[in-house]
Length: 467
Image: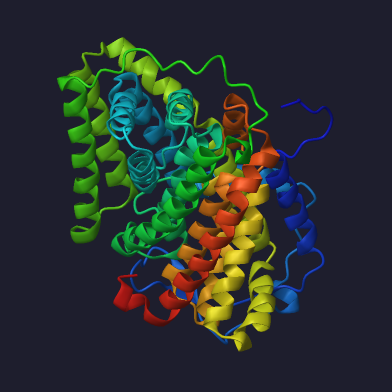
């Protein structure tokens, strides 16, 4: 892929621009406020009270100084500190898990296990990679497997499109239906004021349905290419060289033990969140304990463990900054007393359309936003402060608002052109972006149609569905 010069769309630049626009809006939009009360399930957060919006009196109006957008960035980072520190800590622990070789060896072993038959390989990869995203938001961890999968798919007379689909399709579905992902659903649920990890079982059931649709799409394309190689969207690309597997991928006893501890840590936290009211500090503690025990089992020296943890945490700096900057948008709009006016205006358009239509509108907004802000955590802080109170005013359950965020953010991940991860791996697989869109575009339409059905059902039968 040719590198373009000149202006390019960068997430941090875009969010900073939104901060500036937010301050400009405070000079234009009439100031007003809703009354707020604590959430029943989360007294630490507040929810708007319907039909209580009122313009701010003249004596209570505020005028933000010109440099507020700069001063508010520190406040945004401060108010998002619990998630910012969670991102750093989880990033460091994931780096330790990867340095132990447990994750890569487990993934490679699974791929080889399912590699005898095309349909088994496709089904196995869809399940395994979606679970990685469903649990801890895995994505970058899959990149080393791309050369292996391409080699295997070519040997089975399929193509690199199928190999890429085996990774990024379940990756996107896993993010869209995530149960415990600390970089997505936990942030959104925190902002929406609902118990974190709640509804994970219902989303797991939805993920099964989405994976069935994905299997049908990927397998049909694979069979078509096997029957006629000229039908491949990359039939013109040369794959005669490259695509060697990574080294040292033996799944030994130490790595199996680490994998068992990893699963145990997830189960422990889900149990604690459901029965003991555990929250983000406990999640930090569980992950830190997992990282320390994993380093001991892997035989890593203290200095090596420290350096690995710091490296992993440092790799999360961009995500952490995006979270803090995105949080600043709400800070500016709230300090300028216009965020409730924006909510009031949107609610007025959607209130008479019904909660079902409002939920679909939320899905559309989230999907479009992800094209500009591919960071799931950053997008949550941009959209959920508006979508959560909007849900209250339009009769949309908070869990449905979170689900709309997840669907809008997750599915689009497989084709979003502003994602360095997607574009970089397409280049690694020698797949032109246009060819990938030809493959993934029709699948996205199918997934979003099913997502719309689930959103409507969650509005009407959310409690019965476990949401």
